[in-house]
Image: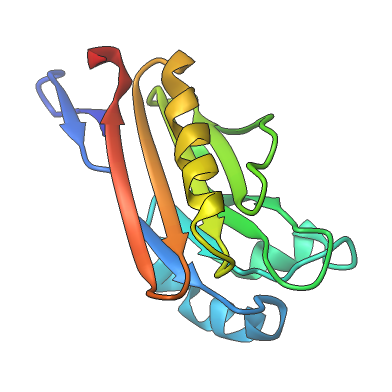
Length: 171
């Protein structure tokens, strides 16, 4: 949630709007991203899995996306994979250091303006072993204050997109 102030000065809570897209290679879709930018700019977060980006793709090339958003990304470094997230710049996003759970990809982003930590995760279709490591890595976020939003894409044998909201202050 994001605090907003109404006309009387009372603080209200507002819901963060988010989407999850499985790109299966983002670079050839930059034109589509540019065309959809006005609609995407309504979102606070746009998480993307399977970006297939590497060092040859500059962050400035992603500026075709939603205006007023900051891109944070974690490239796999080899063929395929990778996760990224476009975050509304007003939310003061900062990438947090975290080792990748083996067999999964994880990007942690702290939203300084609202005390929320976002975990963008992707588990490729290589078996259930990495699922337990991914779950353990997310569970290890208990040191974060505030709310944690975990956006996860689990691939084959079934595809499952999850958004988990965990109020860690209540644990």
